[in-house]
Amino acid sequence: MMEENNLAAAKKQELAFSLLEVIGSIWRWKKGLIIFVIAAMVLTAVVSLMIPNYYKAQVTIMPANEEKDLFGSQTKNNGLYGDEDAVDRSIIFANSSPLVAFMVDSFKLAERYDIDASTPKGEYKVAKRFRKLYQVKKNEFSGIEISLEDQDAAKAAEMLRAVLAKLEAIHKQATGPSKRQLLGTYEQALKDKREELRRISDSLYVLRARYKIYDVKRQGELLASALVKTQAKLAEGEAKLQAFKSVGRKDSVAVISAQIAGYREQLKQLNEESDTIQSAINLKAYNEGRERILAYENEVENLTDDIGEIRSEFAKFKAQAASQASSIIVLEEVEIPKIKSYPRRSLFVLGAGVLALIIGVMAVLVLELNRKIDWKEVLDA
Image (cartoon, rainbow, N blue to C red; front, side):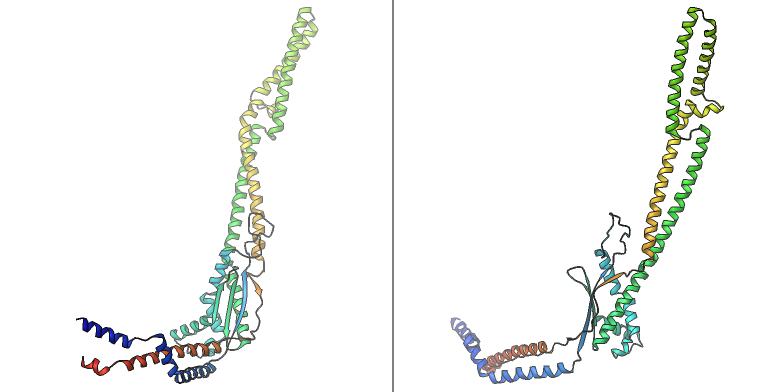
């Protein structure tokens, strides 16, 4: 048993490679390896020369802040650029099917890419080819980078400008209906508030006519003043009446008695409900109508403020909706690319050389290992 184990270990050792043996094997095959690597690099260079050059036109944009308050409200985003939601929305628009379809039709990309688009599968291939050459991404500064590649540098720039124009149109088309809906909402809100104000104002007019209260504060002051003065005059008159009676001055008693009767009638007019003209300063009517009239006056004031605020917001939003400002801001203008972006032939050749070297070394090691194996013995076993 031990002898068998020793034989197996010896065979494994024979099949094993040391580092020196590996280096030696590679050195013995160095000429063949060099020829193989050079051949692979030359073949890759020839093939890469057959690949057409592509030029990449690039642009960086930001969505404009369409919710900006033109009149400087502190509660809204008044920056030049839109927020993260606006950036994400612009990226969705830039990758949308309508934009791709527009580019395919406008630039006859089926012919340009030499694809038969007469079938649904062909249309799909054209769109797929365009999307491979067209890239949209958000950079680290929340800007949107759009790039488009084509074999013609000038055509790549022209197509990218068309993308920006279509993207602007899609923005307008997407936000237009919502803006019109909001305008209608503002108009309806104004109509409802004005109708409510008219109804409350009519009710207030009726209450004022009923209680003869036209200025709550002023009439309250007048009533209080009149009541105090009349009561004071009445008290003074009664005191004089007693004094004149005690001294027997009948003429003065008659005059004072008439005055006291007048004062009492004034107090009656002030304190009791009456349909005469004096009811305009009637305390009982004033107390009954005061709170109701104040409540309606507050409603009128609040409704007036609401209408003013709605009209102001409506005017601002209407100005924004009618604005012809662009929905996207181009940070870097589209320029005709001067240097090709693809293929990078030097990388292809270097990559092919490294790959060929790895494959060659592995082949050499396999051949060397094959020499160590006694296939006759393996087959007989």
